[in-house]
Image (cartoon, rainbow, N blue to C red):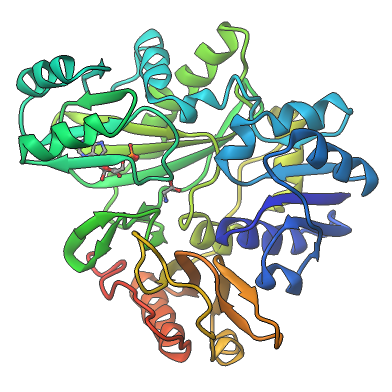
Length: 412
Ligand code: AMP
Ligand code: GLY
């Protein structure tokens, strides 16, 4: 089977690596990809937001499976265009991707499906926002309703800051504050059968100790030794399956990766958000431990045959990913800094360097080209071992202004 991965980040590099390990996958193509993906895939240029251009590329390559990485192409209808040409595509339709594209829509689906989540009010005016802040109380949670790459949320005790964020958005959700540790659970689904993967934890804040602004994610690890037993089964029964069933009932079946961002509160599990695609950087450690062939799993989902597969298999041990971000991230990342030590890090025991925001300069050197530059990912016997290996890898990679958290997976 020939596969084509759409996207340019760390998630797509990790997907391409895992597809390349699957014996049933004969070729991995990626568009547009990044310098890291060249180690395992053939790169093609494409405007990932242009559904017809992506579909045409898939047809030219005679791809048997297209895997769409990021949310924006899904919301733009890339999966619909690929499927319209009779090519299997892992990823939801534009209508189903609204589960991520509109937080108000996701709340409506959760209410209909009886899925536990934070109370929320949709607000379009300062008066509405003000009333909702008073009703739901401090700490205030204000979310941009549209896609914002994980950066559209403000959690604050400062009412003026909450109002200012709302004023900068067309429509916001004001939410009840959820306390407790956050867990990401990803599920592969064909629209009816739901196959959950292992829980992972992501570190969203920019700085150690969960300080600083929200980012796309500064690191992740899996499994979670502290997670309550039965968590995945509970989330499958109370969150994932009811949501997939409700989407099917509405005539907009969700096929692809359903990402549940959860808070384990004192009153039980609550959904913080849904995403319609693999999380970044959680995908890096998750796929590093996946023993099942990824191409087989994703094509079974794309073709409505997930019920035919056995349970997902995992390697023993744990995996940790530490993101190296560019100077200025998350506000205005600086680009063009030369990255050194990549081969040195990749040669270390258990370490793989996953590229995200990298590019070549005119001299053919790898340089920074985005906010999150690399995710140094390591597999070890347990979380502590994987963590030590990942940070050893981080120590080998150098670029001017590089910043990373030193406490990824430290609490595990
Ligand atoms: P989201 O874009 O919805 O995933 O939100 C990004 C981050 O903001 C989450 O990972 C949480 O850390 C935080 N957050 C979002 N919603 C809430 C909430 N209702 N209560 C507390 N923290 C939240
Ligand atoms: N790691 C958070 C996300 O992918 O949205």
